[in-house]
Image (cartoon, rainbow, N blue to C red; front, side, top):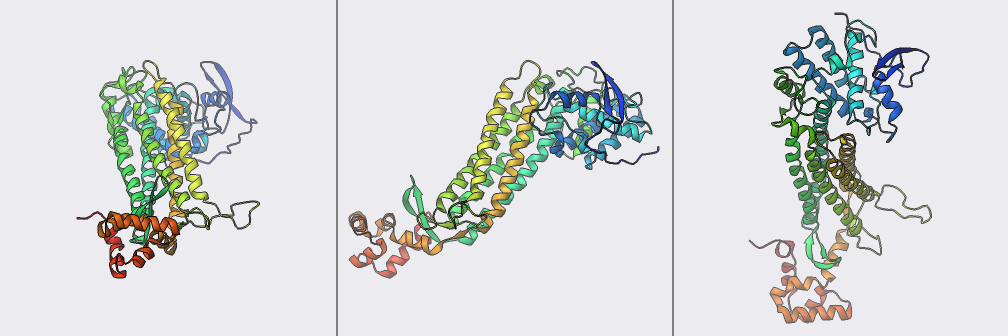
Length: 479
């Protein structure tokens, strides 16, 4: 079989050369060098909503190619698809998986039709590339048809959500890697700061001493917990509805196709995909996406909390807490010379606010599904991808441009501990409540250091006091 070499076309097609295609609504001229067809053309005309197109989510494009490849292999296995056509479809899918033809996936991410435009964009691109591989021209659909061959035994209602599951697994994997990177940055800083004393705070007021290492270890623990939490929604995604066709009854799917498709998709992706037990339920129920979105919201909540803490703890540099010194990233003011702002935590905060809003959008879209299909999967898809990509980038930016370069203002933190009235809480077991209260009142009245007042009053010797305020005796639970 002669295989024509793929050459990347000009995305800005000039309508000087066209080919004629037809569909249910009539005929239209399609750019001659386009791999997409008439249904994609109509979608380009109908849906100009976000300005964000399929080609901006390459993982989703690759997922569609993997699903179409598995379907072609399954159809051939059960005798429903000619071997030459199967080979051409598989070859076209492999090219897409390798990164080719992505510029031909042009429909808007948010579209009417429950994702039909996305599915047809994939079907048309794969069919036209398969035609070239078979030695035919684009648009000669008698030899390989977008619906009759590439979409054989399928509906948008099973192909689209299955591709979504495959893509989400890829985005979750990336997010886990980004979260792990941020976790590791916090863990390294925890070890670096170790037993360096600083004040802990509750109600935005001084509380009791702790170490900077403990503070950053708590941040690392928060992130580690969220990595673990992603496992459950990810496992749910390995259950898919390929073979359900329109509503879950499997209409037009030949005998043996459903288990064959699941087996081939698992082989193509290297992931344990399996057929849902109830295909009618799986075709209409989008609660798994709500579950995943809830996890993303929780990640955003914790990230934003950490960013808030670091902005507060680094406030100053002269009139704030100034416990930590964040890396200087850019001038902070167009009018105040020398001002540096905590821009990285600020951008993390804003990312998290956006992800929290996305979670609400996904919940509304899932609830609004009716009867045997949720037609709002495109907005769920767009929002899940957006949330995960933004969170991944935010974690990497936070780690690389803030956490890795953060410094502890050690002398200032120690001075805050020794002069802080909260220190008397740690002294209470040694000098008693009455003497501790006396020290606290004196410190408030005079503004003096608790450390110095204890020595002046002779309640403890310098050696005794140093031993008591040693981190191992003051900030760790007794065993």
